Image (cartoon, rainbow, N blue to C red):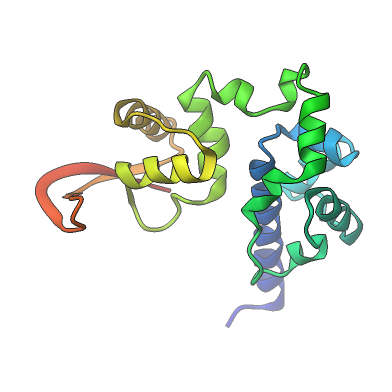
Length: 191
């Protein structure tokens, strides 16, 4: 049985992950997100690294700007809506700040598959747990981020993340289009 402290630590860790997920969905860098919600960079960074807690006030402020009930960030049973990336206030912020390229993730990740994997894909938690096949990761990147990578470029980027110690890989039988497993062994990725 877990102690109360362990439960609180786990809850706080999950809140941080949800907060990071919101930032990922906005497609803003941390400094861009800080500017968008009108708080300091160090405040946002403190929440991300766990040295500060996300307050109800800031959660509601984020929710108002992204068109959802911000207090629901604290409800682990509630899924963060992908639709937040289409919020009017976010679109307006992006339009008014398009010359501040350091605010936007895509200005860096459009140039680098490695940056995309490390800064966008890994924080989503998609690769945690069960190993994923390259075709599954490609589909996720296209569905979630609108990024359609070739198998070759995505494979190279994932192998770079393995080399950096951010991902693990192993060999599994190939996953055929029919859903069955084939004879050939291919890399699968997880962390």
